[in-house]
Image 1 (cartoon, one colour):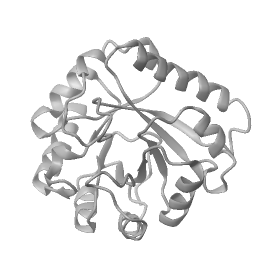
Image 2 (image 1 turned 30 degrees about the vertical axis):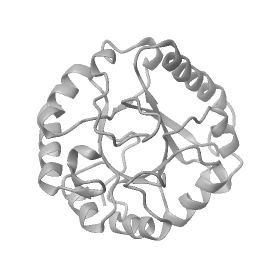
Image 3 (image 1 turned 45 degrees about the horizontal axis):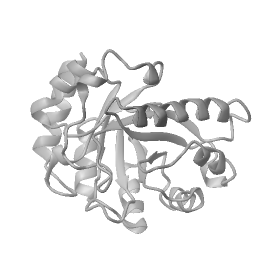
Image 4 (image 1 turned 60 degrees about the vertical axis):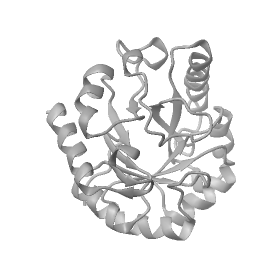
Length: 238
C-alpha cells in the first residue's frame, strides 16, 4: 500500500468514474479529488463517491471538494465516504476550522483552502486572514483539530468555483509572495499536458491540481492526457 503524502504533489480532480480512478492511480497520483458542489458538471452524489473511494483503496489521498457547506454537512459526507482531506473552494473563513473542531467526523481531518490569486488587496486579505486564523486555531488541542495543509491557488471565477480551464496567474506566484511564505501551494487552473512544465517552471508550486486539462468532456477523463500530465510532471520534478 502506498503511503499517503501530507501534501499532494500531483492531484487529479473531478473524477466521476471508477475506470478513471484506476487510471489515475496507475499514473501515480498522490491525490484524487471528488467534487461535492452540485452546480459543477463534475459533482458526485454520496453513493457514487463512496464507490470511488473504495476503488482508490487507500492507494492515494481522497480529497472532497466543498463550496460554502457547513462543517456538520461536510462531516456527514467525510464519514460516509471515508475522505482523507477537505478542500474548501468557497468563501469560507478561518472560523470554519474552529467550528469544524466540534464536529467528531472532522477531528484531525486535513484541510486545503482554495484561493484565487491576482495580487490584489482583496486576495491578499483573504490569504492573510487564513494564515493568521490557522496559526491561532492550531495553538491549542492540535491533535483533535482539523489540520491545515496549505493553499490551492486557482484562477478566479466566482460562479464555477474551479474546473474552468482558465489559466491562473503563474507569474504572480514566484518569487513567492509574502502571504504564501512557508506554506505549500497546489497550483490549479488551466493546466494541461502542453503546459505542465511551463507552469512548474514559472510558478514553482509544491504540487499541481488538474481537472479540465485531462478530460474529453466534463467529468470524463482522457487517460492519454492523464498519462501525459503525469509524465510531464515527473520529467520536470526529477
